[in-house]
Structure formats: structure tokens, C-alpha cells
Image (cartoon, rainbow, N blue to C red):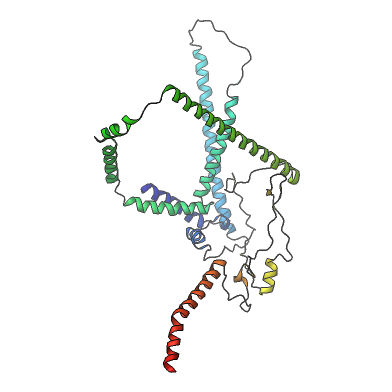
Length: 379
């Protein structure tokens, strides 16, 4: 509980520090905004409106302060490094004055060409170091709220766990769990298991063991053959896709991570600005034509589909769903005929039709006899 609470406190403290940063481009999303995006699908507060040169003097002063701290730390580290080198040289001089203390008189053989034994080991180590660097960068981005969604989810989960674990009687759970395990596994009734289960297990003969081993080997060979076939197909597909992409888009291909693993952050200059984009309301005719792709060209990406001959994946340029005039009815003018009609679906339509049919059946079953009886009484 305490560890989970500490994680939440650290993340929220860093968030508060980032939210109060002098440079508006260094600020991050708040915990409330992220949770509103995740739960409601949208935030009640809109995006920030950042003016050009907003808080530029305070941001520059803050940046110079941090640069000075970094320079002082680097100078101190360099001073310590030079001092360590000087001490090492003095120690080497002292060892040279002492001389060689090896008293071994045995003859030694050796020499020749030396092959570096660490060469096949260094490349895997470099790969592990690359993975470690990526993990550390991701953790850093989570802590400083560059990955705001992960930070908010971890904070919320830590709060829930901290509150839940604070009321869990761990001593009672550990004590009775240990007792139940010991009583169940090591109790005297295990003798009954030996009598009714273990004693009835007939050991296999030598021929049966050989047959079982042969079947296991055959099954392993079949699995290995199938795995090798799938691996060969995957390599061929990857080779074909790589050659096709190099032919269509260029000879360089790189992997773009969905996570923020950059070594350095790109911060906009003080002269940059950001203005929220407000979509204008349009009549139904203009909005429908706009969503249908009028005066718009869709540039395909680099995603290729197809097995024999990979081709570009072409998306539908029409944004409106099937059976609907527009996809975003919130952008319609109030005077448009479809602005007051709620978005419907096949399920809702079937539910409404079923309701109408059920109501008609109930009225027919109960209302018609009553009407006939009333007519008979009148006449």
C-alpha cells in the first residue's frame, strides 16, 4: 500500500511541477483531462491557446538556470576525473619504484596471433543495452508525463491498489493460506491418495516406453517441420515486402515506434504559437459533400496488402457511415433538417420496429375484444 501510494505521489508531484512550468511548451496534460479522455471520450476543457513569445523571459531565465547547473556539474565531474587520473599516475609511479614482485621461476610458453574472444559476445550485449536504453527512456517519459496516458493509468491503478491493500489483513491471509496448504498437501489423508490412486498406476514395460518415446519424437519432428515451414513463409513474405517497399518508396526502411523513445525532446521555439481549431457549422448539403471527398485527395500511406503481389491499401474517402447523410451531425447548422435527428443504427432500428410490432400485438390481443364487447353493448 505504501509503495503504491509513493508511486502515485511521485507521478502527481511531477505532473504538478510540469503543469506550472514557465515555458508553455513544456507543460503536460493534467490527470483530470486524461481520465476524461479515457472515460468520456473527450475533455471538458479544450486545447491550450499558446501565444507567440508567451512567458518567453521567464522560460529563458529558467533555461539559463538549468544550463548553469548542468555546466557546474560537468565542471565538477571533469575536475574529479582529472584528479582521479593524477592519483592513478602517482600510484603507477609508486608501483614502478617498487618493481616486479613476481617470484615465479617456471617457464611459460605462448604468443602467436591472438583472437579477441569477446567479439561474438559484444553484439548481443549491444542489443541488450539498446533494449535497456529504450526501457529507461520510456520510464523517463512516463515519469515526466510525456506519455500522459500511461502516467494517468498508472496513477489511477496505484491509488486503487493503495486504498485496497491498506485494508487487506495480510497476516491473517498468510497464516490461514499456509495452514490450508499444509493441511491439504501434507495431511494424513494423503495415505488414501497412495492407496486409491498411486498404487493403481501400472508401470510401463520396456516396449511400451520405447513406443511412447518414438511417438513423442515423431510428434516433435512434425511440430518442428511445421514451425520451420511457417518460419520460411514468414521470411519469404518479409523479404518480398522489403524489396517491394524499397522499389516503391526508397532504399531506406526504419521502424517507427508508437511509444516515445527519442533521446532528445523537440521543444518549439518561443516564437511558435498554437491556436485551437474550431470547426464551423455547415448546411447538410455542404457537410455531406465535404465528407464524401469533394475537393479532397487522399494520399495513400506505405501499408501494402496482398500475398502474391503487394499493393497499396486504398481507404474509402467517404467518411459518412452507410445509411447516414453525415458522420458528424454536431457540425450541422441548427436550421438543417438533420440536425435534430439522432444518430441511428441497425440495432436501434430493429429494436424500434420490434417495439412497434409488440405494441400492435398487445393492442390487438386486448383492445379488439374490448371494442367488440363495447359495440355489442351499445347495439
